[in-house]
Image (cartoon, rainbow, N blue to C red; front, top):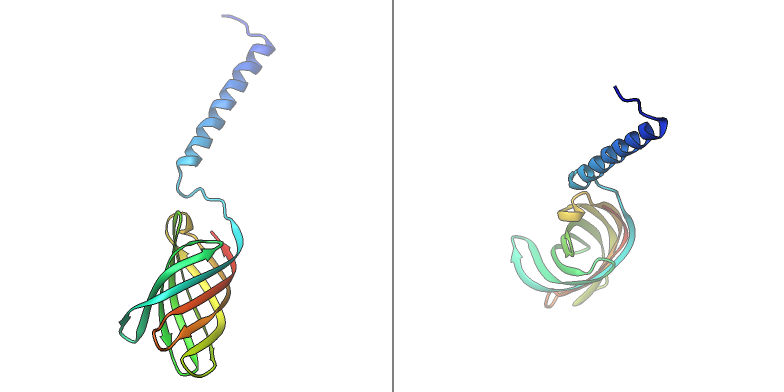
Length: 156
């Protein structure tokens, strides 16, 4: 039987520990449940045009610029004094879903609104997305085009 010196035992132990850490790190990289939350303060502006009516909702699509640029799809319910909407932002790496509502201001063809929005989920890198903030904009009642601005906190 060979005797090992303290340095040899330390070297073997160090190599074994490094192998265990490397295996755990690579397993964590492959584990889809391994996810570090990221929180951002974001302002996005969407300019959308009317596509069609879906029941009592207006479907608008367009592009978003700002903290999460991409395509956007918004379903509006526009009443006499309020507006509500559900939205999807098609950002790089996934989608972000949410809803907002607010009070309408003004009369005539162009009316503004202001209220709150909530991010409820998403897909891809945004699958755990949640957040809240402000929901503002202008809707043209003549052609149903809309400009929508959202400001708030997004965690994903």
